[in-house]
Amino acid sequence: MEAFRAEILAVPDDPRSGAPIVHHADGLLVVENGIVVAVGDHADLAGRFAEAGVTHFPGKTIVPGFVDAHVHYPQTERIAAHGAQLLDWLDRHIFPAETAFADRDHADAIAGFFLDELLRNGTTSALVYATVHPESVDALFEAALTRDMRIVSGKVLMDQGAPDGLRDTVETGRADSEALIAKWRGRGRLRYAVTPRFALTSTDAQLVSAGEMVAAHPDVLMHTHLAENLGEVAAVAARFTTAKDYLDAYDRFGLVGDRSVFAHCIQMDDDAFARMVAKGAHAAFCPTSNLFLGSGLFDLEKACAHGVGVGIGTDIGAGTSFSLLHTLGEAYKVCQMRGVSLDPFRALHLATVGGARALGIADRVGALKVGQEADFAVLDPCATPLLARRTAGADLHDRLFALQILGDDRAVAFTYLAGKLAHQRDRI
Ligand code: GUN
Ligand code: ZN
Image (cartoon, rainbow, N blue to C red; front, top):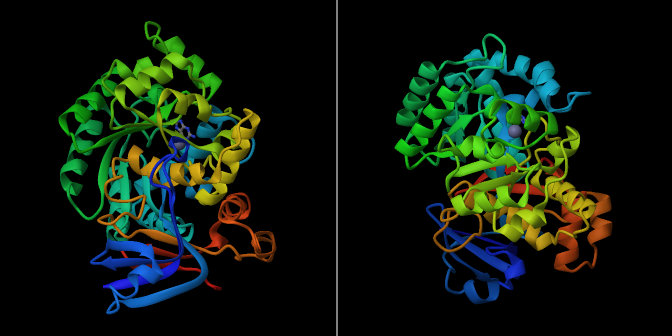
């Protein structure tokens, strides 16, 4: 048994519901076999767990590990690619980069770097795109298994609209996905996601096949992109002429359900959000990506007013930071553009529990509740001279907001996976 003493903060429920946040100014998190067995005030718990070895983080704040609800590991090296919006950006920058993942050694190298980068940023769970190559999933899952991370991923299904070397067929896409599901089921903290890239890169036959796989395997997720860019939406409308809208184009193939996560959801009307809610589908809000590609402003208020479950995604490599703290800062700015001030406690809720719900793992992680896995980040509000000056004497709400606006990987002093140290910043 081990214990961690610091300020502790978690936001298990949407604060707008009036539910309290969990806050212990001088707290103790007690962990046994990787599971949280107690969390509370140090003064209340220290006696009861006197035999536990205590690691003390004075001046720092323990928060649940962040959950990245949408990210592409093969795009790690193409972050910050200049000069294009979605469809051109894919052709010019992304498809060439993804072609290289036919090489297993390359996939292994990037997978390891990517997962370490998540850990450097306090991210302990993620829903991750691989490439069309099944080996790219093996590379990521093997690296995640070694680190004992909660990673959900799957082979991209893409049988049209992509260059040679980056397309599968209905048959190989199905066979490779089924083989990966069977191979990785029940191993470590991994889960599979059936991953059609987006509606434009799969034939109808492949979308049918994807829907059949989702129906056949109740333990897998469905992960794709939805209504990101106006040119994309127009192309979808031109192809699926009898579909009501982009969401309906997926729905016809059985791809909209309570295990579905749709990245972006920008070009959406009320009716589309209402149908997402009726099916229990989730959205991943990816503000740095949406700004970088000029895609548009996600309407968080509209989505949440309808009751859509929302997580936060970095969407590397269209996204520009691995840090969910920084991503929350950009989410704040996107909401400002829509005349809404995103509350920092609500933002933390979205980046932890919101993502965990989208990934179907909210029973296991996200709130540091007793019985959950002890995945957490130790934040340093004095990580930089500016942060130290800005947060001196600040109350919790103000400090958390400053961390979201000014913070990034430098503000993550330590990251723990199942109670074990997984990352330590160079200079503490
Ligand atoms: N839509 C289809 N593929 C992609 C991708 O790789 N990134 C983003 N942001 N949108 C997509
Ligand atoms: Zn994406």
